[in-house]
Length: 481
Image (cartoon, rainbow, N blue to C red; front, top):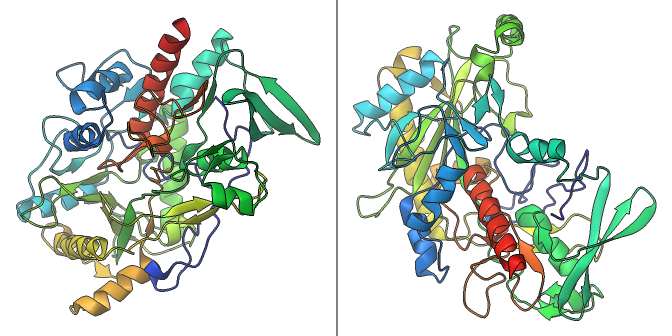
C-alpha cells in the first residue's frame, strides 16, 4: 500500500481563506492524521448508521448496503461482549467496554435521559439513536489501533515491509496501467515496481494529492501545475466532506472533572502510576467517554447529530492549556451538505495540498449545528449534571440565534473525519468503482476514507478499516483471475 509512511508524515493541514467560518482559515491543526479520527476520539468504536450504507448502495455503490458490510464489520471485530447478530469475536480489532468512566460522564447520560433521550447500550446494534458510554478499541488498557491490529502481525509474519522516512512522489504508469511508484528516501529517489497492483491508502487528503501529481485529476488544474495528464477525472480532490463540530466548555469547581491545576496534575501522576502498574484507571479513558446520537428535527429520518462528552475543558483541540476543572461537550453535523476541495499547491508531494473544507457554506449545516448546540446547552444545564455548577465559557446567556451562530462560526472546527475526495460509484464521474479500482486505470486501487461517496454518521475509524478489509478481498480476487 502506497501512502505517506514514515516516522513523521510530511502532511500538515494547510489552509485557505474560508468564508464559511467568518473569514477564519480552514483546517488549522497541523501534523495530524490523514483521514481517521482525532486523538480525542480515535479509540471510539462507531460504524455509522444502517441508513448510511443503504444510501451508498442507492447512489450506485453496488455491494455496499448495510447487509453487505455488516459481515465485514463483524469479521474484523473482537468484541469483549461476545458475538451476536451485530458483533463479532476473534477478529483483529479489539473492542471493549469502558471500565473506569468519570462520574461526570454518567451524570451527562442521566441529564440527557431527563430530556427524553433514550439510553442506548449499543450504538452499533439494532438502533443508533440514544445516549450512553462509547465502546473503545483497546486491549490491556492500551489503544488497539489499526497498526496493532493489522500492521504489526503482518510485520512479524514477514508478509509486509515498512519503509520509514520514505515519501511517495508519484505513481508510475505504462500507458493506462499503474506499474509502481517513485519514492524519496533522504536524498535518494528510488523506484518500487509493482508486480500486480498498486494500492493507495494515504487518506482523504494525500490520496487525491498523489493521484493529481501523478496525472489523474481535473485536467485544467493539473495543467496549471505543469502535470502531464494521464486521466482527466474532474472529481479527484472534490466532494470533501467532514464533520463540523462545536464544543461547549463548562467550568466547574470540585475534583470530579479533570484540570491542569496542581491538584489535577497530582491526580494525573497517581493515575499514571496506577496505569503503569495495573493498566487500569482513568488513563485508559478515550476522553470522549459518553455521547450519542439525536435528531435536530422531528422530520429527520435518522440521527443527524452526534455528541462527545469529555470530563475536561478543551480549547483549540487541547493545544491551549486550560488549568481549570470542568467538562466539554462536542456536537457535530453528521451528514453535512457543505462540500470542499483538495487542490495542489505545487506538483511536488513535499508541498502539502491546499485544503478548503468550506465548512458551514451550506445554510442547512448552520441550522443543524445551531439546533445541536442548543440541545447541548439543555443537557449540560439539566440534572444531575447541573449539580456540578458548570458555567458556560462561551455563549453564556446568549439566546439570540444570530449571535449564537456567530459564536458557533468562531469556534466550530473539524473532528478529523474527512472523506469523499476520490468517491466510489458506478457512474462515469466516480473515481473508483464499487470494487475500489480507479476507473480508467488498470492495476490501481484505493483503500481509505477518500472513497466514501457520503460521510457516514459517526466516527470514521472503524468504517475505514472495513474498507481496507474489503479492498484486500477485491484485490486478491481480481489477481486470482
